[in-house]
Length: 209
Ligand code: PRP
Ligand code: URA
Image (tube, rainbow, N blue to C red; front, side, top):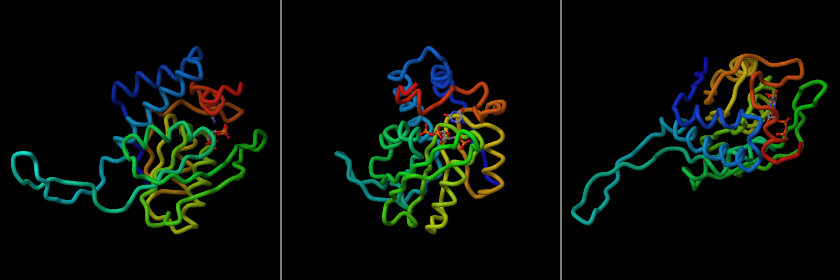
């Protein structure tokens, strides 16, 4: 079974409360999602392997440590995942960025795919899937199924808010994928929105409603 990591750092909890606030407009919402993504990326990358390397300081030579192992790729789920990209790239500037376009059909709540462009060596990378909202879990699970069909074997999911229903689906369909989130909320409403949640993340990021 995968692990669900709830990042309880005070800065994360403070900024999360600010994006929940309906009075927070698109500019502040974007800035806060960006900052939260950097803070969560710090936790998501906590277990990256290190290797020794010799470095020469102005004083002498020493053995330092640098990140080893697989290269990293980040895959935002369009649209709302786009808001998390720069925050992660701030910490991992060499990561390659793939995109998977999915929208949730408002009637069936099932994900509909409309775009996909991934790095050519995606299967060799440690992939971090980005989507602020894990609601029914359908979008994240579909994106990860797609990546696995391309032989991607090392995947983590980074979101800002998760519903218990989405976690359950992810753990059933992708028990090998750890989930990182700033909070687990109570439940979904009858339209598949997270309660108490923060509303529609894509609309709030891009000012479309
Ligand atoms: C939102 C969100 C997730 C999805 C979560 O996207 O960004 O991708 O819903 O819901 P789920 O867990 O039930 O699949 P939406 O479909 O609203 O598209 P958008 O990002 O383009 O606004
Ligand atoms: N997508 C959103 O943007 N918000 C929710 O609460 C659920 C799905």
